[in-house]
Image (cartoon, rainbow, N blue to C red; front, side):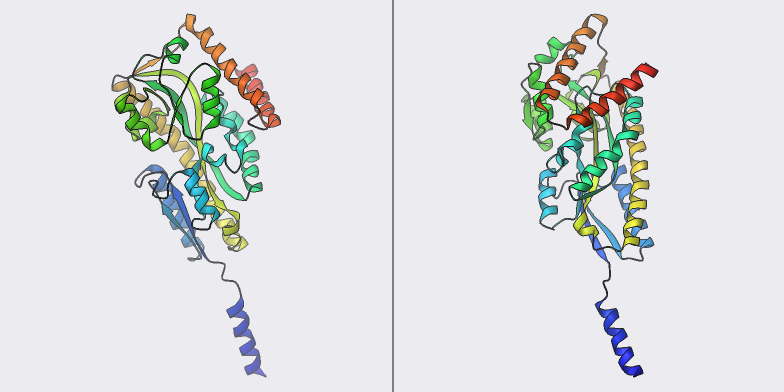
Length: 331
């Protein structure tokens, strides 16, 4: 009788789910960057706290292709996740681009006020599409940077401006103000600047230095153009292979790292801005005479995007109410 019970127990153990997995995650971030250092630290802690049941394997530096390639590989199971931009994730959840509306934010204080209240809504929207997000990571403000002065709207319309390939919001925004942008993948931008195909880009200070674009620009329009951000997502199908306890550990560690990455990225951008200024790159604030024309341009972009309804109207309305509340109480 004891022998039969022992055999039955062994069979039950053998058939029980192990709840172990290696999650393969792609990112454009280069090895050695703060982003990758934080993610590798995260992987080590997750593996240690789950006794090796959950391992994170990263593919940095864009070796798995651009955002659309990464999403395709996630769908077929070649990858389980990716660190993607908001524009890249628009293919699965268009409203994730909510913060990407051109000229939306005026300061980081506005960003913090809005994100505290709306990040959970966007993360819930990704989850409804089958993707778990562990927090939104700031890339900073993108500014228009050019080889030529950008001290007026008239000068802006004379430039050959880069538009990220596949970013329909940026494309539509530029066209609405009489600018014909040049769509290019990120990897072709430096060549475009060197050959004269484009002479103006939108980039954060850190991005401009990391991608070497700062070597081809001399002027910056000191008005936040677009708020850059991304998130690391993992497909729910892959996470379902983990035990509830291991999923909770993964979430706890990931969310903690993303808070750190978010703050470090902001600090890095402030430092990079100073570095650009020290290299003689000029930042142009609109003068009193030009300020009104810039505001008219901003209003036209916002009106056009609302009319096209590229994003969920109630979400846009909620965001605008938050901005109005902030601006009315804090100036």
